[in-house]
Length: 95
Image 1 (cartoon, helix red, strand yellow):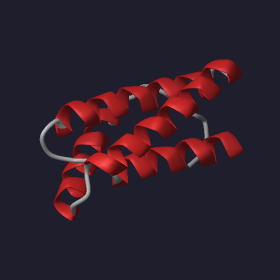
Image 2 (image 1 turned 30 degrees about the vertical axis):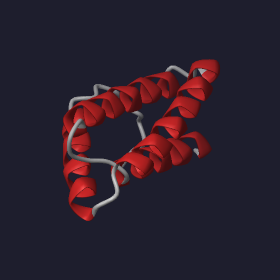
Image 3 (image 1 turned 180 degrees about the horizontal axis):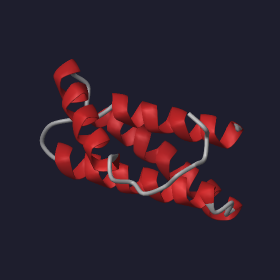
Image 4 (image 1 turned 120 degrees about the vertical axis):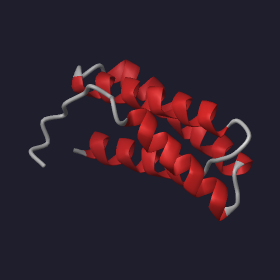
């Protein structure tokens, strides 16, 4: 459960800190990485998940520095959620 919390927290931080210019590319990249992390978690691949988690944290910091305005953040958030919409990972959370 801690893994899910940390992953979702990281994803939320990334979603909050990004936009314009290379926004679409950044959002697609972040979305692909989030899907890869979810797959590693689903497969119970601890080593891959830990490496993925580290990458997501670094990506989050970069996005936080890159995108600062509310408009940028909202645009990134929309593009990010569009990018992860088709992530085919079922975590069986029963939600």
